[in-house]
Length: 274
Image (cartoon, rainbow, N blue to C red; front, side, top):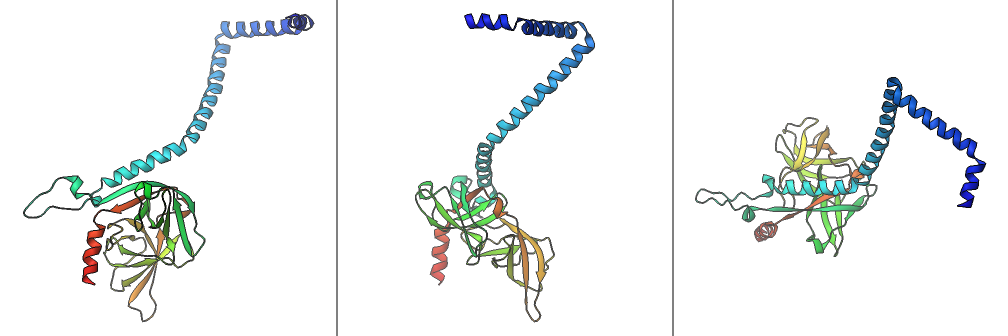
């Protein structure tokens, strides 16, 4: 306390000056409409800038939670699409129980490792067998096809992506319906090639390429990309089509792992034909 009084005594002129300045400023602002309006405008501008910066910082910190919520919402909405259900209506009976008709279920997962610059590219997900993930499940994102689950541990799973020269996917032209084998050539990560499309098929740049549905992994109609270049070698009966992928694998954060509840039934029937 003694030091405090000594401080006031030593600096009483400066303190008095500051006090008078504050009083003067208060009187000028309080008793002059122009100065009062200017002060309010300035203070609002400063406080608005502070609040805006605080809001931006808060939103940035919440991006992870927002992304997770959006991924879960996308998964739920996709599970409600007609393509997730098996049509069980026939001439004699009508089955309306959606639980009995649901063919595809989806689980949200986060990409925790990724590669695009190798010939055999994989991604790692933060979900495994404890979350219901098994081998040969399809993996997609909000923008299109990603790949197929290859290996699974208790808490993680490895996915062979479409950017792997060992993986072929059955794709088709959405407009015409012609289908072929789609694979990566190991070069540009943004493009894959669709082969076995006959030359009498109508193909134009910009046509959408989607999954054909001719497998037990992916349902029909999931986006793969769009036609970028159409090539035909002399003497060949098929086009070679360059497809620009809809998924940017360098910007892949969340995916959906899909399970076909009727997969075993389909495979058993097809194997019996062999």
